[in-house]
Image (cartoon, rainbow, N blue to C red; front, side, top):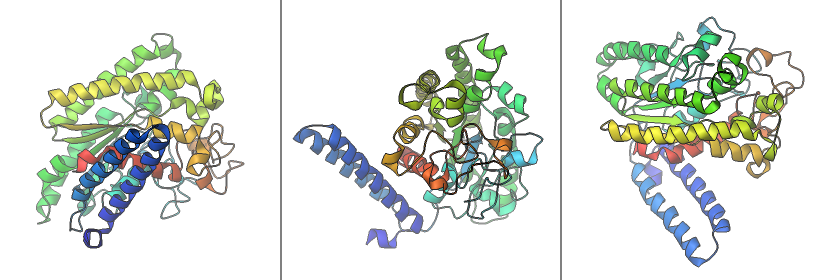
Length: 391
């Protein structure tokens, strides 16, 4: 009875979570020997379901008022379309499997993980790229996307590619705050302060700092070790979260680095090691992620009322990249676009030879970014780990 009265979005969340938990239970049951181990897993499953059931309420509204997104190409939905930079994705074959079957600026054949997240939360449309012409009026009531491909925690990364740095993204957010006050006032059902304080903030950065800067920049890798460089990034991350908090953000989700050594372009340049990925690059990502987790815990302790969740992107994408067949994929070493070895942005274009016909068989769309099919799996994982942000 509860599910039949719930909104479509909430029902989808419920079903998705049940599926994920059941899959986890089966996996753990195969790993944990003995009767007590299985009952422990059952306890976790049904305990989780009781929590999730409370979230399925009888209303047809999104579970949160708005979504705000900051970061790099993994979450950019078109801000780079409107700035002078070579790092763009507003041309075919990008976007060929999107809802409109046209390129939008997303570095993917279709939807990003954040697009699926918006759908899971009950939104009928996605937060607009803040620099786009559509980012106005009522469209801004559901939040906005400030991300810019080739940006990162290290300001020098964005400068290198003329992208929008995180501090600049924060300035755009300040502009948004001033605009939303007026927009909300003209909409009787909207409350600007609730949009800011109850909205979910997603931050996804750091990959470009390593892949598109540190590893190829002798001014950086000759001067400092990956560990020292990650320390700089973590300081920047901490500062960004504190600044976002000071502007009213209270529900923040930040993604870890992915397995950098499993990206097709990284494998091409650095070479594969154990499991077909570059162990060195993956170790750098793991080291950064450990620091990210520790720093995030410190921020939660020091900033009153902050709900900060670290989304683990590393493990689920590593699983997809190293065991693709278990998740219904046929290829994880090569990307779909072109040769699948290196192409991204302007190198992934209508004239790229070898682009696959069916991207659902591939984990990666281009040399650095997952396909829509992989993004759906990542988004489902985000949903479970981010429950506290919407409960």
